[in-house]
Image 1 (spheres, helix red, strand yellow):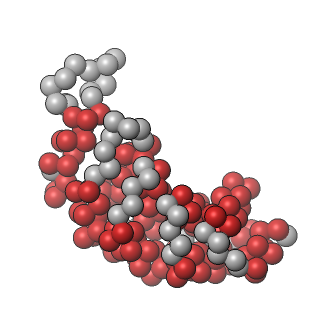
Image 2 (cartoon, helix red, strand yellow):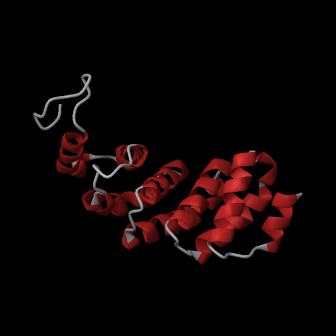
Length: 167
């Protein structure tokens, strides 16, 4: 598929894929929306415009997202440096509501994304901190590093979390 432009090594042009995905986005389910955002993030370059259409559609169903879908979506938009306040506010609310289900990777990726977007979402950072302290023994070195960096970048001083990370 694609926009009719010649492919390179059998891979369709990215812009055609973006155009096709945004025309049928209304039919996407929760997993497809999250995966689309993740794909845009993985392919991040200046040829892929962040999709306001995708952000708007995701905002409508974000409360149905799994914890992983939420983390992947906020990570993708941070990777693209695309700030969509209504979507990020919806992700924040849904993430706080589902924080008990979060795993270390989701917590650290969400914190990283907030820092990358320079978004000081204090309620979400507090929830991430609280949950992280409970499961800190499950964090990898990368999870610990990303979380510590994100909290420092967001100027969110949480001595109990820093003490647990340092121990």
